[in-house]
Amino acid sequence: MRILVVEDEENLAESLRQGLSADGHRVEVAHDGHLGLDLARTGGPYDVVVLDLMLPGLDGHEICARMRAHGDPTPVLMLTARDGERDEADGLDAGADDYLTKPFSFVVLGARLRALARRAGAAEPTVLRVGDLVLDPQDRRCRRGTRDIELTARELGVLACLMERPGRAVPKQDILDEVWDAPHAIDPNIVEVYVSSLRKKVDAPFGRRSILTVHGTGYRMAPDGG
Ligand code: CA
Image (cartoon, rainbow, N blue to C red):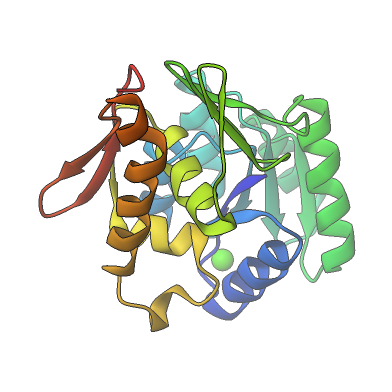
């Protein structure tokens, strides 16, 4: 699943990122309310959002209410250090789907997130399609038209990043954060190497150009698949 975690306690945010990543999820973290809302609106689609209640900038209620006001149905699990019926009612009124009071067990959090995603139908394997380019991240298969394309795990991750946001510029650092385990220790330019080999596999043999360079930023998947 793609999970957005909005949590200002950096140690907790980092342990959530590590724990959920180790469970095979792709995790993005925001440490304040404004960035959290921004990512929820433009960084997705996410399968589920974990929202801390007390945040600098905008609080969790406000973020959730604004997501719902924009028609965003992404399941939201609210985290709170407070423990009272009123807070829970407030959160659910704001459109949260579930609630967890800190401190919580990571195992319980994982189970609740899976349940939320299942209810939303997001646990179904998602096949990405852009034009005639098809990627099944679950089965690790890629094809263009009827021809299968062999990709390495890393190439597959990079391509999935781009295909999840067709037509949108994706910064190299975002690709690095999603696909590499220790992204801060790695030069973002490594992404170029993988994009270059992807182009040789998904574009060149078919006379297509689907992975476009956005100068100074990163890459963009052509909305029609090239
Ligand atoms: Ca907080």
